[in-house]
Image (cartoon, rainbow, N blue to C red; front, side):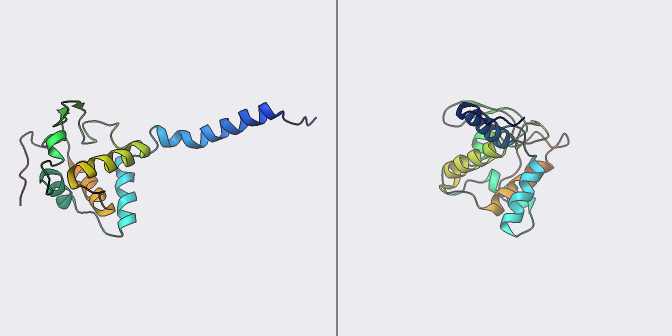
Amino acid sequence: MNTPLTPHAFRSAAWLALALVLAPAHAGDTTAALQMQRWSDASGQPVNAERGRLLFVNRQGGEWSCASCHGNPPTAPARHASTGKAIAPLAPAFNPERFTNTAKVDKWFKRNCNDVLSRECTATEKADLLAWLLQLDARTPTRPVQSKP
């Protein structure tokens, strides 16, 4: 027997469907490697981990580099250069939760690129940075990596 949905039941079903569609964007819906591929595809260029390393460790015209807050190398907990707020390791091998939430990845790239570059990062810069971060593992030295080649 088909009974029509009441307006309340219909709204509830619509909200449930919307929640199910949006939920993956807020919880572990991706990986760092998939994010790297996403940005590489968007840029139309192959990734270059060395460019990513240089972007990370060098100041880009302002007073900060990515390493100012995330550490150099970004394999251990660090502190924000201005606020002192604790920051978990950035390299995915040292923090498996990094780059697993597309909404957070987009939010933090936008905010941090604006802080460091005074603009949004390009798709190429994001892909290159992720390529370098994905190379960091237990064999990564704990001493700072050089800024200029």
